[in-house]
Length: 251
Ligand SMILES: *[C@@H]1O[C@H](CO)[C@@H](O)[C@H](O)[C@H]1NC(C)=O
Ligand SMILES: *[C@@H]1O[C@H](CO)[C@@H](O)[C@H](O)[C@H]1NC(C)=O
Ligand SMILES: *[C@@H]1O[C@H](CO)[C@@H](O)[C@H](O)[C@H]1NC(C)=O
Ligand SMILES: *[C@@H]1O[C@H](CO)[C@@H](O)[C@H](O)[C@H]1NC(C)=O
Image (cartoon, rainbow, N blue to C red; front, side, top):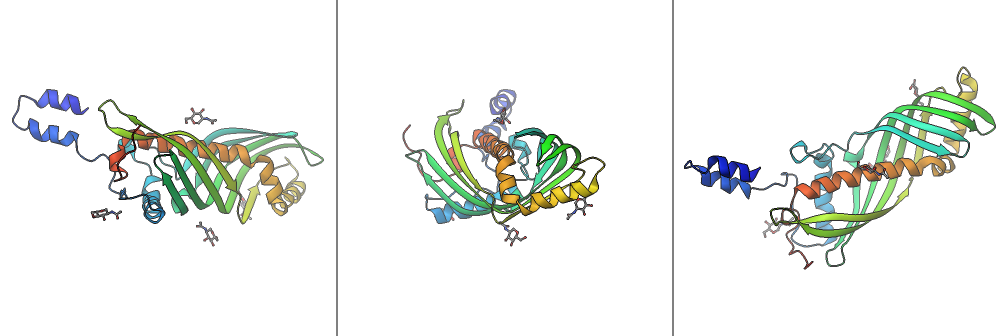
């Protein structure tokens, strides 16, 4: 885009100012680059950027993360096929950043956050649940309190077409601790049988930890993938030297 401006405006006197624009800051104003990789600075910078970042940065092609949409997510459980539909997850903007460590030379970036998240949507469930045949279809709301997410990210560096350095995410691993409590509110688990539906829902809530271990992983994998894809878009748009005022290691 910058190149086009230069071509179009070359013949007029103001060309210089447009050329100047090409080196203008790309990073949104909510980014405060650290001058070092001390965790204290990285934690604060990350924490400060989350509320705005999670709204999305449309001019950089970065979609919102709060809410983020789960269009359709099939989950195969032993005996039951659950499909989560038209879902919306909220709460990411309020995540607390507990730790951030960056090892630039080693290409390692560690991030630990604590979040309250709410996922709302529709679901269908077909199969057997406990001893009962299930053919449910209704609303589902899942509220997760104080989950702890630890990410271990392998980074890379690369140059864009204009020769500017960027951070990249090569791969990642994570652990997810479901936290203090998960509340399930799922309607119509057993069609036409509200008593059984309520009894089973109560069972799910009383055994939330075991229940979540059964089906939580696909949901969390999905959420992590959305988050990382979004971060990748951001790092593609914003050069390294606008994110961190520490010389980039040789690569
Ligand atoms: C980095 O250093 C500059 C210049 O000394 C200072 O203005 C800025 O506040 C520092 N940034 C952070 C995040 O501490
Ligand atoms: C999550 O919510 C609980 C109670 O609703 C609150 O005590 C806690 O501080 C919240 N945690 C975060 C990370 O916001
Ligand atoms: C569960 O959801 C239904 C409708 O979606 C609502 O009427 C009900 O109050 C909710 N129950 C709780 C405990 O939040
Ligand atoms: C992760 O997200 C990307 C882009 O949104 C998508 O293409 C890919 O299939 C997803 N991978 C998984 C494992 O969900």
